[in-house]
Length: 376
Figure (cartoon, rainbow, N blue to C red):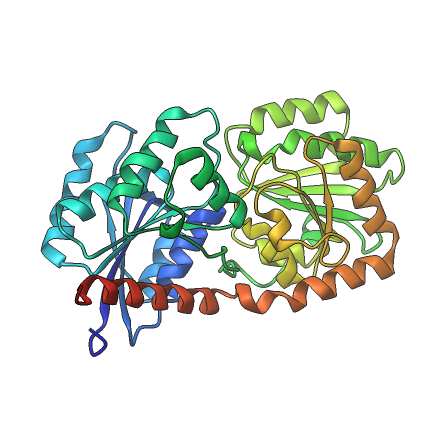
């Protein structure tokens, strides 16, 4: 097995230039060591042109199934046909839906190694998902990957996934491929003296962006010139726009929509903020580290495994806009603290670089494949 490349099929619902899990899955496929791995990526639903072009430019074989709805299962039949025909050594799926279908396809087609990758464990109360994780996916998959120890513990205690089948490998920093020219301050007409807080998140419920808006309203009472820029879009946007109007902070909040240049945007902000109710291993924290921007984040899920409170960032309780505003103010008004947090965070980044994490996965693939052919 060591004298040939392994054929690895990555499976993901969406391939996109936004969303941490989506960007990581595409980045992982694109950064596989080509002398050892032949990467394919199957998108069961859709892929945006920018992300797909990046995959093709990287030499990844890309297939789209065009699934449009949750129960549009007939479009998954080509997945089974492809897996059977191409004789992959490894299927590596990302997120719950793809984990279910890839586990079934991999087992039916006798793929030697099936890896189910869960990016953000948030199934408390969703008994069907928990049952499928613990009784279907964990039964059919060779290995579960959790992005944090916090996620691993939940999978063991709440779902009954065997501890020995779970590997913890954190998300990697995947640079954005957007334009590298321009400046968010110039774009918005802001001088260098204006304090700017930056957020990049898909506008989903778990991101708790309404807490960020409440915190910003409080902050304006002490720093009236402060601006909040939010890169991202999603189903919660109308409610957030209504909240901005209700709080009377529209002049100090900029909703940028979906952006492919978050790395560049962060070059123009003074502090990054993450206010989620739960997280696995958030890519935004790593983006802040790379941009040497100090981060203030809620101490949830795997965030505490990426941010050491007081050394590489500041952590606050979830759903506490007063604490969030106070921590952001500390960073904005204390240049020494800001510089120290940013420098310490950047010093931790190397272990999270995408090439380093891709190397870890390539080693995992080879080890698991070797284990399947080892004599009993």
